[in-house]
Image 1: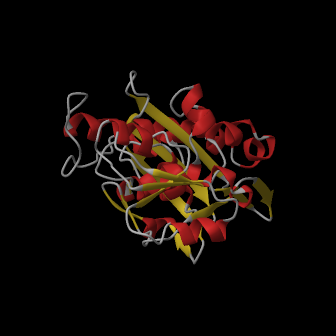
Image 2 (image 1 turned 45 degrees about the vertical axis):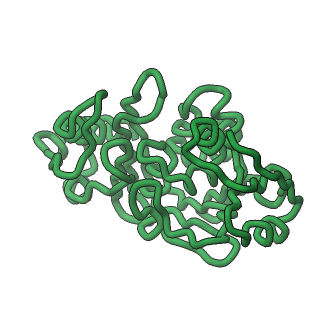
Amino acid sequence: MQAFTYQNPSSLADAAAAIKTDGVKLLAGGQSLLASMKMGLSAPDALVDLGGVAELRGITVGGGTVKIGAMTTHAEVAANADVAKAIPALADLAGNIGDRQVRNRGTIGGSLANNDPAACYPAAVLGLGATIHTNSRTIAADSFFKGLYETALAEGEVITAVSFPVPEKAAWQKFKQPASRFSLVGVFVSKGPQGVRVAVTGAGASVFRATGLEAKLAAAWNADALKGATVSADGLNTDLHGSAEYRAALIPVLAGRAVAAS
């Protein structure tokens, strides 16, 4: 790991000002960035730690919305009684990310900004039709995820919070890779203010919506509606853990299980 400078701002304004310099990276939970730095895959000149920015933490529930600050950890979301009551599937997802260390250090904002193709949170954000708040604008989930580790965030833009509309029904199913606990395939389904949504992670270069399955569930919200449903393997991932065809076959199965559990 190469040498770098470290800054620990106490306000969002100071953090936003600090990252305007080239070669600077934001540090949230550090569960992805620090590992990539150790492997030499990332070599920032400076880190701006968001851990001291209190305004980026916290959870509020009301008015049909769950709003989670960007620096709120997965463990905090999983343990929050208001989240568990309003969107049980979101608390369930957060409580099964990685291991205890990851859940107690990793943050929702860091996960979304990184946009790992097998991360869990992007499926909840896209699957619930959430809104991402930054220090300069709001971004709808459908416009946020652009591709492999790519998002709509501009240079110097900081995620501040995520707002989730409370659905009528929602559930999460994850077929995990046992060593990493990332999703080999993960499916989040919901029915609510944003209509019927089925979001898939782990199968492609980035999280995506399975619109064919959405259409079937919009006609009938039950697992039987997905019997015989198929998803194309075109463009899906093939690696040592599973082929594109295997992942394609898993998607409707997991979606059906999620609907049954909702």
